[in-house]
Image (cartoon, rainbow, N blue to C red; front, side, top):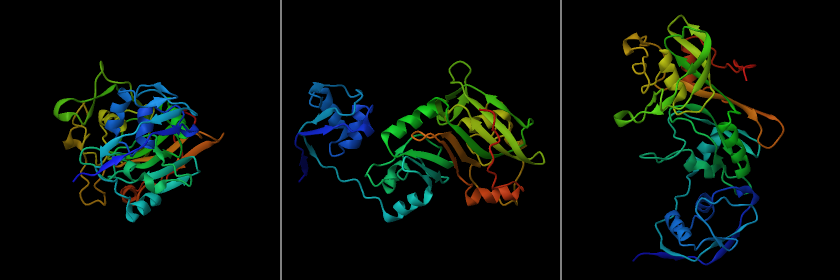
Length: 338
């Protein structure tokens, strides 16, 4: 016998924290007891009201407005499983900064930021572990590839999330990545420009250069150390935020990132696999050698500069040391180039 749940008419006032949020997104977060699909259907029928008026799903709410939640009856599908103690402790162990407004974690390699096809364990799904004293769940403000480790920012309120979101879009945030590339770039420093677009067909998970349809992308780089002409420790500053941007740009340079099985230099005019130097016998970890090391930006609330550094994980330190590179490098090689 199926179980059903009934809800009564409710009126919820929009808080300051949710000012400017779309109705459909607000419902997903604040009225989780009503299935999202059902809520959208009821909005279209005019049963959800804001200050007594019919509204559309994409309307932006304002603090102080009152949302009428209609009575509904629906089949219960099962409750969201509670976060395990192991995952709770794991998430808390990743935190490297928390000032009550902004949280930063050092995301490990191999862990996705959000869910997707065949992805069941991810950062977004474990954010309940970082709920603050006010009961508010932190929010993601940007992304990192599953294969990339390093600084990932979270916001403790809608206001902070909005401010950081604008900063990322307006290029008001300096993101510095560390990578090992091979072979060594010809120029000690420079910029890579290439319009990028998602490839179609069987290569749809790759980004490719497309002069007509691609989106403008720009990455600055500085070679910090070299191991002869074989491998280099390079700092990257992606001025734009395209998917896989640094990975594609290093491939275009003919110096793909060590351990990158998706962009190995054999596409877009890069180096062939035969040119990649053998690392047999060296203590090199089998992973993408790309790390989001540092984020510098204006604090979204305070009149201060936010400067967060995420040290290399142990496995990358091992690779860095194998080539004699400084695994504790903390300087800003792009200082003065803002």
